[in-house]
Length: 489
Image 1 (cartoon, helix red, strand yellow):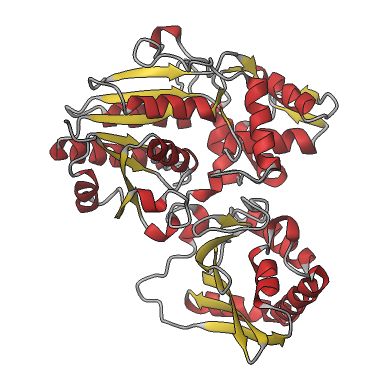
Image 2 (cartoon, rainbow, N blue to C red; image 1 turned 90 degrees about the horizontal axis):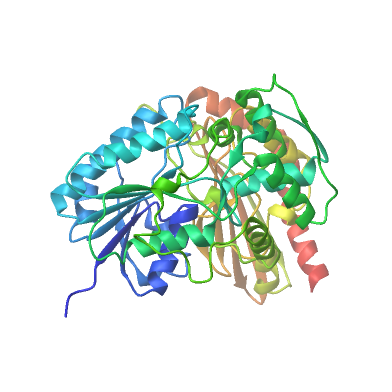
């Protein structure tokens, strides 16, 4: 009997990658993942069912270790937030990956790119196509699946569509909202991706994958409004609205930050429609139940959000060189200064009641008072290129390590005892917010600590400048955690 194929998934902490791993595990594949930090995925329900290779995709040694013995390697890495030269960085990463796959004797690379058939192609889509070409530069066959807008709970494109439609009954839009697009449901994307792992003979071709409908972005917004029970949206086309201006507006109105909205919006200048000549049907037959239409895909996404069953989100994936992370990195000469704001309180309420409030912090529950100050900090963060508060939470009540929480990320989580959040706002240093809950002498002790590692003098001046706000925000937060736990009791 032949040994089962070893499958490698890169980008497993991202939106598509996290769901693909779950699909492959459910289908009993032997799965290995490559992640920078294993803690990013330890909260995933499939974490114990996969082999975790810890390392960086731009380190050849890490790639060699991750690709050892692999038959099929999924390349789901994206450098969308790496600044103006992201296309060069993406090309180099892909080239290195392909060479490592060839050296390891991999049989197949599978890559998810973007449909790029229009002559008027955006820089973003051109970069995705170039990434595919670089992956195919060695002897390892590359199966490149090119998709348009992916409709699914938590995808960046869907969140952009959802929030624009919900919040703006009347909108002035660029003329390219009338360009045609070919959306596809996330379930169909996963169907094709997982199907690639079962192909008997390696395939080296480019395939376009799309749903059963082609429609304009404006038509998709109207369809979304109707399915959401909203009135018809008034869409006024304004030729002078450039993709740059549009992305700034989207960064203010939706949870998607401007840095991510810019390439997404830029892609809409192209007609993103699958080419029938690049059909995948002869290699992977369509789903037995048929491809998912746009209305069904939207309804599935909305019901998943309503039922709090969102698996992964666009904000799950982070890059250490993203705009808001660049500000976090310590220069080589940085000292080890640590500035803290520590608060303690005891209460007769149980550990369970207090923990329920702490784990539910942020998102729709807010920050236990002083929410206007948190809101103001979020707005400021958006203006300087950060993520702001609008990312919210994946689930309103439960957290897992590695996921985003407003402008924080869950770095450590010990259920019922400890929560540590890492700040992803733009800062002159690194910041954490930590809560610890213990039982002592029949009472519950809560320790709340904000920690800041300043970067140089500017970082220290920042800390002292915001300290007056800390004197109000942090005691209020701790007091209201206890108060709300008492009310819920």
